[in-house]
Structure formats: C-alpha cells, structure tokens
Image 1: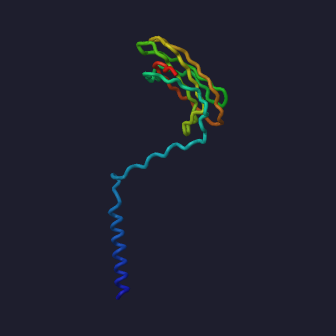
Image 2: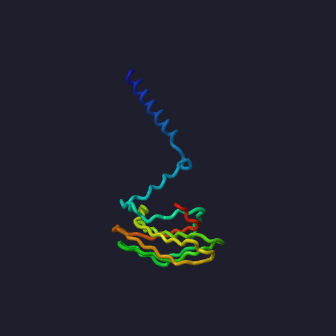
Image 3: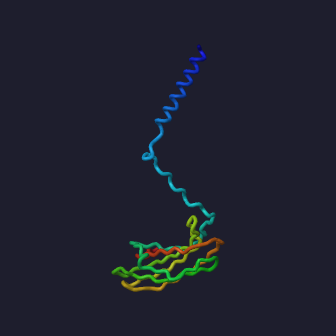
Length: 153
C-alpha cells in the first residue's frame, strides 16, 4: 500500500508541476521580439589620430546643402571633393567631414575635414579633403556637414 501511495503522490506532484508550467507560458501577443544583434566588429580599430573636427556653436546640419562629386575608396591615399552652400541668411562657418568607414561595424579608418570660415549668405564653395586608408578591407565614404560658428579653443 505504501508504494501505491508514493506512486500516487509522485504522479500528483508531476501533474501539478506540468499544470504550473502551462500557466507560466504567454501568448504570442505578450511576447516581445528579441532585440536585433549588434553588428559584428570587424576587428578594425579607428586610428588614434583621426583629423579633428572643429566644435561649432549653434550648429545646424546642412547635408541638403552639400554635395560630394567624387570619393576614392581604396587602400592608400584617398580624396573626396564637392560643394557646400551657405543657405542661411547670415555669415556662417561651414564644416564638411568625410569619414572612410569599414561598412561592417562602421569603424572610421580615415577622416578628412574641410572648413569654410565666414561663408556669406547664399555663397557656394568647393571643398576637397584627403586622408590615408591603411586597412585591407572594403571602405566607403560617409559625408556630413554642419554650419555655425567655430568655437574658440
């Protein structure tokens, strides 16, 4: 008899455990999607001495006022050029930055900076930047531009 009671108790306990687990599951509507994994690093580390980008006071992005006509993207000396326009109603400093990045991981491996000080309203300026890519991986050019007043150091 004792063994029957032990078996019955064990069976009841197992049944309760299964029922308890069933109550812990959630519906698909309650489940959150898993976050996307971060891009895998390529092992490339940005050089410690990238060209410095000036700090601007009252900065405003001006990507729509900036064009990049050409940008080389191979190992060795690289160059990019284009135009930037001051579409504001006042004299401004313009800063154009081209970053050469490794697409996977977005590591910046080279950077060029062009500065136009005191650009008059409506004026358009040609810019050229150069740098040196030292990695044996595919790189791409990324353009950014801002206007404002260069902060004094």
